[in-house]
Structures are given as structure tokens and as C-alpha cells.
Image (cartoon, rainbow, N blue to C red):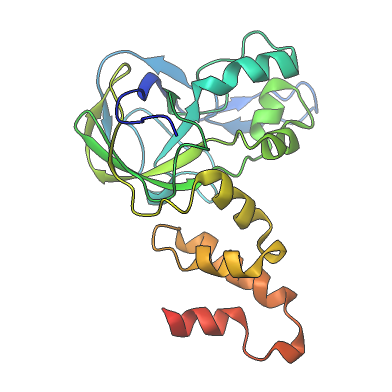
Length: 239
């Protein structure tokens, strides 16, 4: 694992308002804040987002568990090659922070980072929606992102303050080294493939409640009647 205490840094910071896209490809307009602009200088980080940033769909984006979206700069060259889109780079996937020196293999659920004045915690891998595909005109981009594991991840804010491009990312604490984001992502999206591992993930305190409930629900739906008590009952008693 790369030494994130010394190598990791913010390449660029991106924010932007929601706006309407004309939808020339489908004839239907759509609203999104995926088109963000790079910011120079310090940016204030609040409990739910960065100053100047916005989420068009608050049901699926934003909130305390998705306050900041991070994407590894190491992934951009691969996307440029695979999509034949030379303009793919920082900000291309709606990220707030493009980072260098970290990928989903290096980051664990619950990691606590110090960046400038801010303390942040890794909350979950990103589940990509249809908007990056619409933005780039690549119909199968969502399954490509999922299959590649190049999803990026979200952060919750533990201490507010300001950060800026170029600052180092210092790993303050790693409470759950058994949960690199690649493993978390596989388990979240296919919990019935390995129910024991899924139950373990559902009990991890760093996992957002929404994902915990979804994992439990999917395990209970898949269990056979003769199994007795469902996973939901067992996990509730364990908690």
C-alpha cells in the first residue's frame, strides 16, 4: 500500500451550481451539478458540501455521508484511452476533489484524513448514476465504472474548515483496515454472493445507515424460509 501520509495530495478542487442541460441526444433536458469548475485558493468545507457547490438531486446526492466526492487522478489516463476522450481529467466525473497518490485499493472505509484545517472520514464508495454517461455521451459508462472499480468515494466532514489544491492528505486514523474500498464496493453491490462478509460489513460503524439497511434487506430477501430468523433480526440483536 502506498504511504498515504507522504504521497497523497489534492490535485484540484471543484465546485459548481446545478444547471439545466439541453439534452440534444434524447430531446429531454436534465438538471445536474456534474459540470464543476476548478477553484483556486482556499475553499470552505461545511457539514454537507463545499462552499459554492450544489447537488441537483438531494435524494441521491449530498448530505452528511456524501458531503465531498473524491476521484483519483490516477484513473484519468485509463479513461482517456478507453473512451477515446482526450478531455477527460480533473472534474470529469463531478468530483469535488481530484487526488493524487490514492486509489480505491489504498483507501479503507472509515479512514480519517487531515487536509488543511479540515478533518474528513471516508464514508462509502460511489455508486455511479446515469449522469456521467449523459455528460460524456457514453451509454455504457455506468457499467464500465462499476466493472473497473474506478468509482471514487465519498467523505463525511468531522471538522469544518478550509482546504485548497496542492495540500497534503494526512492519514490520521485507520480503524477498519480490513475494509479497503474495493472490498466494500464488491460486498455492497452483491451481498448475497458472500452473506457472512456482507453481515460483517453491515455491522461496521463507519458504513452509512442507508447501505446497512439495504444489505440487511437484500440478505433477508434472499434467505430461505427454513433458515429461521432473518439477517435483519440477527443484526438488530447484535447491535
